[in-house]
Image (cartoon, rainbow, N blue to C red):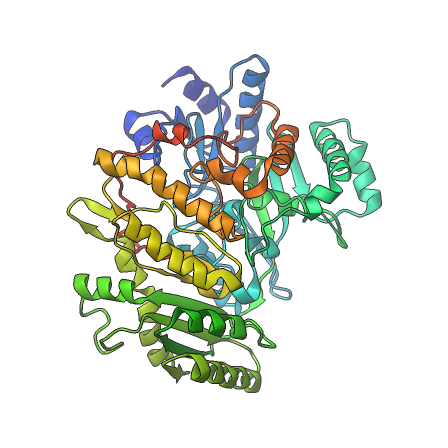
Length: 543
């Protein structure tokens, strides 16, 4: 063991290792990037995390910075779960449901808990956590909080930030704080503390007061945005609350060790309306009309003909007897899960009328087995995520852009043109009801030509999304991969403000440096993988 690993193992209850194979394993997440850490720590409890942070802080005060990166299951697609210093891996021990209130549905959890297992437990109490990502069966709730993840239900229920009520967080110096809404009196007590926590509150309070106009104008104006820091959410009618700031911060401001989540009543009965479209403008008009319904659908999803054709070529029996050829250009899935059956049926009728106006044909189902068959069309994106042919495979490079709904037509048309210019095969799917489209190019990272094309493709794609008034990330956050585009997305003044926030919480730049920090794509070239594998075959990748 190296000296750092020896020291940590002597002071923490959990396990520490620095073997070459462990360091190699944790050198990658689900992104296309690679950074080898120095030490792996499996914390047994919050005290282990606190001691580790304090150790790094003390070293940094003496001029030696050893970064800390918090990690769940490593499904992050932006390079936010890798780092050169200490990797703190939560799922091994800190994976419990600490408390559950059967009356209001609130749950207190540790960050390493598997999202799918939490969801199963909640279902037994007729509850659920709505913003679950497609990766819920193989990702952690802590990772979802760090990324402010969202999913197919977010159009109606919102993103993860909406469901996090309070947090326990280890700050950069090892202090543990609890977040939640503070009254003016409670805030004044925080401002008077002589600890690092008090310093954080004082500095942040001044920063927010001095930049009120800028914060109120922070864009972009889209239905969902996980990029940057949520400064606008700190002050609200409920009081002064750091919780929204930590959610989505990707471990760059503090390390979350416990979270209180609110949940929703789970209604298993739903109605699914599926529309088949030939015209892109009609797709946009239908989406806009569906968003004007009195109650939003619980899902508005899409796949395109290119995805269906690819699935038909690679796994022809997957969609056999589910959808017939010739395939429509676009398929939209609209689901309603209202607890009131009459309301649900009324909304489904409204959706049918919209599809009668804009779609070539449509289908309505409420029987579970038939709905599951239709959802197979949307879930066929898993074939794209596991696509490997001639050394090329689907890579998570430009997969999470979101634009205003009235720009959908232009966005999708632009995607087809982008891939045609770069001579790449395309397949589209995603949360079209929010303007969020997923697309992953098929490339071979072992080839120098493809490695060079990556950065040209990124520049063209993110420039297009930003020019359309969109965000570079709807639910997967910035990480290292999208950080080079932060200034183009927000402007220099806002980026400088984000940097000041980071400095307040992490003056020595210990916590996940290089993540959510403006940089150049040149910095990515040195850490780009020479081959890519998502290593998720056991669970079957979803998106």
